[in-house]
Image (cartoon, rainbow, N blue to C red; front, side, top):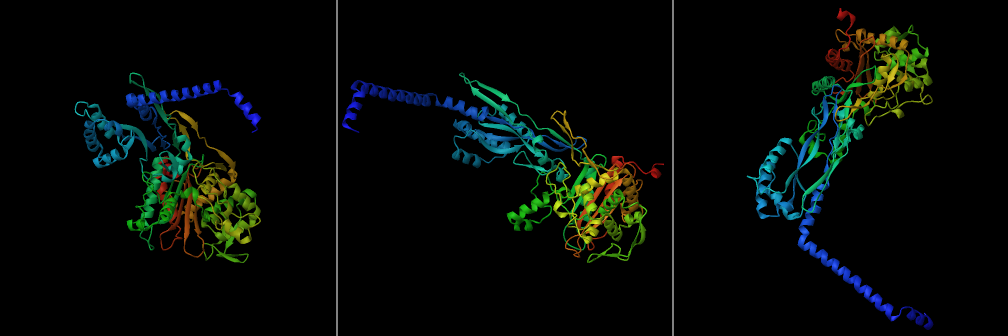
Length: 614
């Protein structure tokens, strides 16, 4: 800066202006000093009162009032999942320690009423002496809460018990433990659905927390405003508790029976059952083995010894749990075996490539491409009508039918029937198996032949059951679903989940022909062990050899319906690797299906056969 500029700068800030600036600065300092002094005085003289107001607003004014998660009920209103009110024991340590006379009586009540150790309370007093909110115990019952409330109200005998209060909460309960575990699912971290309906309808089941706001006025009177919680809605399922119970009883009995067969282990690797209304897509029961206790979903003791569990790594335990929680009926894929044959014959009839007047000769084997592919009867079935082909479950005839249909039309009808596609069922984790199906370009003659009788491609139980319903109901493909209605907490209907007709798969004429063939399967063919006295039952058996071939492992199945005219129920049973010396034994699946049908038909009021009703 030049000498001239410096002189100019000094002239701008005269001595008078400099004095004013000094006085202003001193004034600001004095104002800050007065303010600091006032704060110090308030803190010393009335700090406890103001702290109490602030802390009371934290403890009470900011208190969250939890919502009640909505119930899951069966079609008749029986609760399958509900939230039960419980209480958390909260201790205000600062209140308890504000007077020496309060400490021991309060500790005594905590011990006598809630079983809380004195050492634990003393430890909290040392670690967090200023705490206004310490959770000592969670989830105590209503009865225990009432016991404490009687003590809390008794100022005469308990005058010095201070600082204990109960906070309302909810815990998810499943009254029937493992029943319908695959369908219902469970919750984690309070109100986050995991698996099943709990996950698929999580937002509907959840509500919104309420809150209590409050303050102390000048006379230390507590004032409050309460915003009530909004509780979750109730999900009404299509599941029938009685049908579900019957299904699970027989699944368990089957697996218990086969635990001590030729090979060690469980009764089967998987056993799945779906009971469905073919007229609207409602699932009345869905279960698989093994299942798990919804109230304790991480408990593996039912299936593993203490030694085995102790030896598991964290990763092994997690994988085991994920496998246990998996819904076999929705999430697993497998080769359907001969339950595919009604679909292949239906496609041929729809295309006009079959008329029903055909006859086929089976010598026990057919050479296709570079392969010799055998029939289930290696000696051959001889000459058969199309109806007898279905009744005998003849692979050789189906390979010839596949060739008649052709690769392009066969693949097209696989998609018409919904194989390799999502059904849209309202449950999480649905597999599609789309990458496990051939295209018209990739399907060679041998693959077409094996696909025609149900090998060399994969489906899910839900896919096959939903499509089979369309075959027996006259061609209407309904979206399979497990929820029929949403209600509010007072039982008012919020939303009806009406049946959704997705498409037409076949004509009623084709449906009637194929049903006639499947009635013969039960009355005269491979499904005779599925017959139920007094009812016209039709259906189809399936035996699929697992990969790698020739290893002796099979998936057995039976899918059936009743009555013959206007079917009212479909029952689908799949048994994956039964624990037996001969896994291919064809009576396991239809036998299990018959045990289930014998009980559920009378309960559901299924129409009896004309002969039995006379």
